[in-house]
Length: 327
Image (cartoon, rainbow, N blue to C red; front, side, top):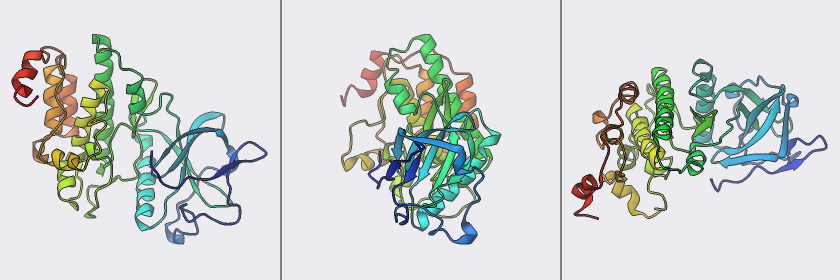
């Protein structure tokens, strides 16, 4: 998780989370005192209807803490926002816009119920669907058993879920820009796209510094620092996720060396594994192709997944012929 400053909370008498800074808004929080009046979003969930226990802390990301909460008798996730500065304000606005569209794709994007705000500090709270199995990364770590036919079908279904979410976003002219296994959630066995802090309209001409997790970032973005991510950048990230979903191992796990970005930009990718369906390999390798124009669209990739054949599969001889000289 991020090393960003934490949201300091204390347990109140009614067992709910409140800011420990009662009269002094933290400079690390995106509060109404920071946001210009004309840019302040409207809140549609009264804070008093949210019951959030300090003991129900779930996770911390780059933009704040997430708690399990109760709202109108329903289990939800409450994401406290801890951003500041112009770039963070843009991130917050992007996430809010993308989440408000989730009502049109509830099967494949995390459901957004509304926005709330701490009355004293002004900290914003995103109220969203609670995913019962956490992140895709955690889900895969807990499901490392060998790929039986049934399990492989389930993993391919997860890939389809992610692609269906991308088909929707791209149809709405939205690029996710930060697709990785901590930003995909699992609920009732289905994958849901989440965390749209870096998402943007494909119509935007805004360039960006490289942000996100390097193994999942389009080499074009890594190589040309202000190259604006495109829909094909999401497809690159999806290709990396396909490899991870099959192996249950994050791409380039354990590598934190300075040469990793250079290796990725020079075409280094994770290796095929024995037993992988050849069609599956061909698809993720098309998705993570170094050349963006050679990658399929989300819709085309989904069509390939729908007709994917599980045979033939990669053999030891195949790996020897590909990697034998460099292993």
